[in-house]
Length: 262
Image 1: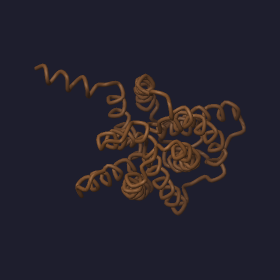
Image 2: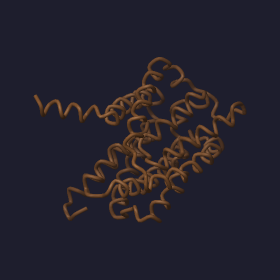
Image 3: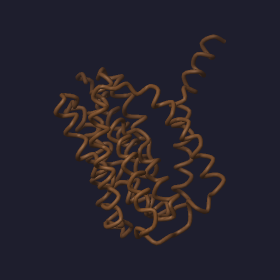
């Protein structure tokens, strides 16, 4: 990462922003992954290194949500099991596969999710029992297995898909859904990270520096979420979705090209 102190500050700052966004919504890795690549890491190493920060970030977030009495341990661990199996598969695929086309598909799905949030706002704000329902158990397990595959593959945006699965199923509101989300991500990251380590795709110095920022951002994010409630979290989620979809669909690049031509 070089000897410049400003690079370390930039990594910690980016980690803080990512940890805050990841805790309240998701897609914080859309900040950290480009930065890690800019610092000279190959894309595959950046993808693996980012998991170090994600692991510490969600350890802090889970602990904070637990102290705030908003974490459903039983329901979260039941959903973490299929997600973790999926993440193991996704991480193995990520070692070799390209993800450009996948980013376009994910961007389109995020645009669709914006419509769902705007059209059905009450579903995202209502308070519901924080226990697993017996109905549609197989479908729910398959859904979280698929989300786990994606999370193990690239991580960026997985929090948003987890929130959609948790909230739109009528199982959690946004606040409790976020608490379960970070528990699930913690579980599957603990399994995915060793795959990248085994393939030499983790830079520990940068990863641990980034983790300092992510953990701090997660701590702040949890306290704001608990204090402000679901309405605030919903607006953060909408903002993150808009920016993430624009980036993944190439809108920022298109604007840059237009400005260069004009």
